Image (cartoon, rainbow, N blue to C red; front, side):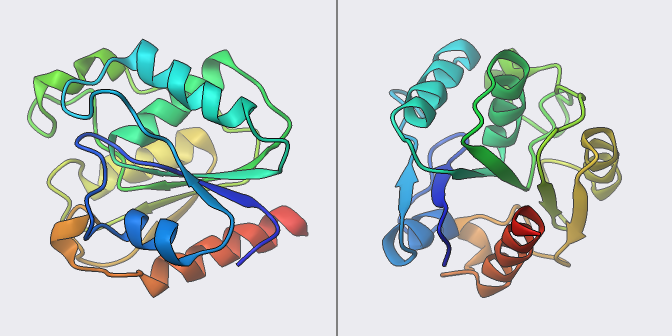
Length: 183
C-alpha cells in the first residue's frame, strides 16, 4: 500500500484474530505490530517504552496506526519522544481515558489524555455509536490535536465486534493520510 512502514499499535486486550488491525498485519505489505507484555493490565510507562523500542528499531519512515487505548499511548509517546521517521498517525476509536463512565479503571494511568497539537499529519477516525467515547469528545480531541476528523457512521468501537474484516474504508482513510504526507 505504501513506501511507509505501517506500525500497528493495538489497545487494551490487543487486537484479536478478527480485528481489522490483525487483518492489516496479515494482508498489507510492510507492516509491523507492537506487542505488549500484558494486554489486560496496561502500564502507561511500560507501553510507551515498548512503543519507543519498536519505533527505534526501524530505519524506515513510519505511519503509526493506533486503536482505542493505543491512541492515548501514541499521544503520550509524542509528549516524550521525537523521531523524524514518524511521518503520520492514524488514530482510530480513541478510548476516553479521562471518563470512568466510558472506560474501565485499568486504563486510568493513561489519563489525562494529552491535548497537544500533533506536529505531523494525523487523522482521527471515530464511530457515532462508540461505547468508549462520545462523538463530541472525539471531535474535541481531533480539534485539540489539529487532526483531520473522520466519522465512519455507526460501527461501534471499530473493533472485532464491528466485523470489519480487512476494513476497506479504513484503508481508504489511510491512503488519504499517505497522500497528505506525500504532498
